[in-house]
Image: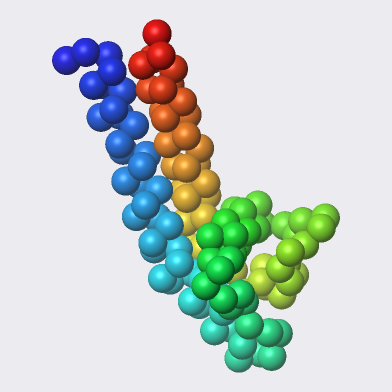
Length: 114
């Protein structure tokens, strides 16, 4: 196997992890947090279909960071009081696998340029 093929195989692992963990986060953590917010009258997080990617990424970074941001897009304090340890671990997996996937993508791209 060449180096490029090895990098593609190794880069596929973070990509699959990112896809699976993002799916799990949206199906379990986001639904749980949204149900809790609606049940307690804090509002609905649904921004519509146009901002779905921004909504997921904002919520994942908020939960992974475990503290409110300086310029909140969401109601950070209201969301953080309903976050479970499972949600924090899953959000950190989403973030770290995304960063690894981007790192491998850049390495593969630069190795193909040479």
